[in-house]
Image 1 (cartoon, rainbow over the protein chains, first blue to last red):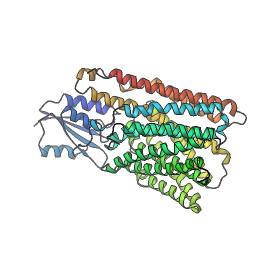
Image 2: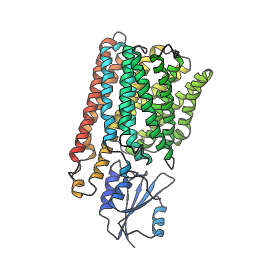
Image 3: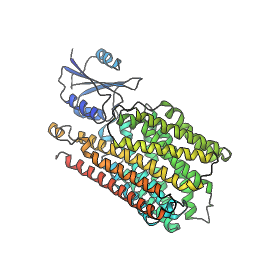
Image 4: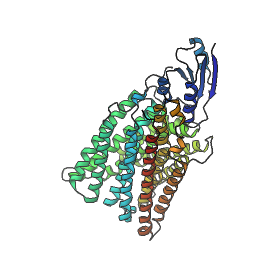
Length: 90
Length: 424
């Protein structure tokens, strides 16, 4: 199972969340998985992640929080693991 | 949930909003120079100079900033860009600028041809913009609170524009179109509450929590206050016997929004000095004052002599403060976003990127804040009996300095963007 790196950017002002997520996504290795908790849906981030070539998926929670998973190219985790990691907003 | 749909190819280049932002201060400067020349306009709503300056400020400055911001804010907060057509934003800007200058010239000279030109250019700009904006708003899914209120603001803009067109046509063809004083008041009401306040309400639901890490604004703003405000405008316009009650409720809704937004800002987690927060607070206090004046007027308290000060409270105290505050955050953020994208494939260039704070330095923001306070102070002093000739002119000079300083700050931010772009 890939190593999970987690951080919470909910209390950072823009563009700090973007900077931190891009920096972490850029250095992801094939056996690492990034899980980020944000207070809002960071729409400008997704095209940047696409251009980096990393995989990503997110879930919007009723509280407004967003959980985002990012993985290195060709290192997608299993569906079950994605669902498990997205289920909780903490 | 996948995040397909938004790509950088669909986000307009930085030059699109910056083009609007850089032109806007010139119109503000023209309005300020009119004040220097004719300070009496502060007391007389119907002077040609008053109407010219008001429209230079509302359309030339305010609408330019709002439209320019929407081009970039829409994709960032809703995921929907306004238009894929590269030349459309420039065409809309050209029509808006031409129409605004023609309208101001019409008010200053009473030349029907100037009103005719405005009555062509401004509706065209409005139709093109609302067409793009409406299409984007229609596509937003899921429809968040902010987009819900922005849809109402689009209706407000159409109402304000339609009523304004009627007035311009009256000035252009007075023998064909009869004057209707109540439509002038309705135009003012729709432009201020239906368009400006509604737009600020919709945008603030997103940008206040996003930029200032505050709690979310209350849900009743989008679910109840905004649609009720629009409904009150329809009632006040179409059903004159209920006008006073509708205006009183509009004042209550507007005031309640201002208090809710001030509360959210007071609960922000980071308490360090932030001039955007200060400008928001200044603006919302002025919105509260506007709501009090509107409520008092609707309740039958005679405020005829306060028409000038209320215009200053809303136009300069609220609208200009909001725009100055938003620009201090939006411009560096957008520049930074575009720089991130440009440097994505080049880690060295990414390391060399300037801090977002350096794109519009804190000292520049502080000066802008001080100039705005000075402008407002001098404007208010102008209403002290016997002071208008002196302080009115000085207020015009301060406002001119305010707009020149804004233009200079934006231009420098633009230069920093191009200087930081990696060479191919």
